[in-house]
Image (cartoon, rainbow, N blue to C red; front, side, top):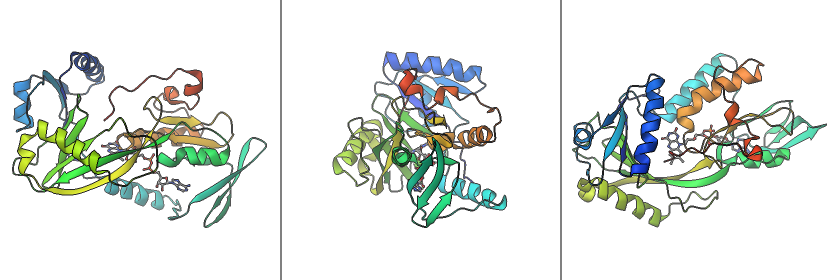
Length: 301
Ligand SMILES: Cc1cc2nc3c(=O)[nH]c(=O)nc-3n(C[C@H](O)[C@H](O)[C@H](O)COP(=O)(O)OP(=O)(O)OC[C@H]3O[C@@H](n4cnc5c(N)ncnc54)[C@H](O)[C@@H]3O)c2cc1C
């Protein structure tokens, strides 16, 4: 049970440029059958009470979106894979990839070597390190992102949605009996550092207090940092490595990999089995950065 909780996603908008972009996305999403709505500021309070409407001109809301639990979700896939006979090894780190005649030949791990003609690079923030072992460039950079949770909050009811404050980059949703607050600091430089930066926390809290003034009396619950696996256009890389036979990339989800995981897994399995993928993912090909044909994702939180 992935604990999918359909509380809806709301994007609150201040700038005319963002409104224009979101209206285009709204049209596309409606054309694909999503029940997304445009909300006037006075309608926002009915769904997300106690958020300040200062500066907000419009919001989009899709009630079918929601929250899920990544650990439960992964455990479900793991159980299903084991039932199908898949062996899963924990704490097995790939340390080197040997190639021969332009093909994958063998991987070395801290638990032994494996002769293979196929490697799937799904190493998240470490994807470029796997690429380096195989002698190819993979355009994925590790970027630190921090989150803070609050203690219990009376105004956060079970239906409280995920809210993205597009102008400030703040997002929040219910977590336990309080809120989880996050923000994308655009100044963070690529690194594998996941220590907690107190200035980053202050920046999250400052933006959160502006949008949710009732947080003034809230207690901080927990905080942590993780790594986004960021590509130059903030879209995933899915496809065969053009320079090395047998290396398949499915990585670089740029902070939205949980949402895209089921579809990414499906098309990966289809392509590797030599079938036509059920979704056209040619726009995510690894070579797009060299060919300069990528299409920037504008809505990254
Ligand atoms: C703070 C934060 C909030 C996020 N919020 C969301 C969200 O709301 N929605 C959403 O969709 N996504 C979110 N994401 C992004 C999401 O977590 C990632 O996009 C997703 O986990 C990527 O999945 P993955 O399987 O590609 O990589 P990962 O989950 O990073 O897994 C990569 C795996 O590769 C393994 N690995 C790496 N190197 C090696 C090696 N040499 N040998 C063997 N194994 C190796 C790692 O141990 C790891 O298990 C968030 C990320 C962060 C940091």
